[in-house]
Image (cartoon, rainbow, N blue to C red):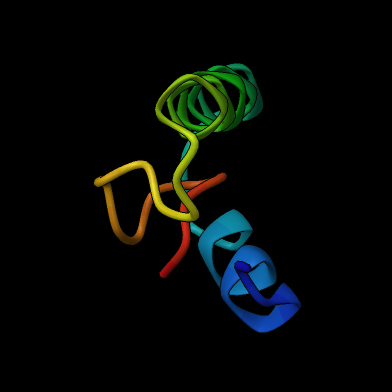
Length: 49
């Protein structure tokens, strides 16, 4: 289970909001489809670490 600290630290990455929102949705989609806790893109918004 991903923790909130990782979520908020990944969301603080400097990038335009539309791109950040796109990455969150993409990474959550990957996690849901693969039934995993991590999407495989650490450090991106919406990922585990």
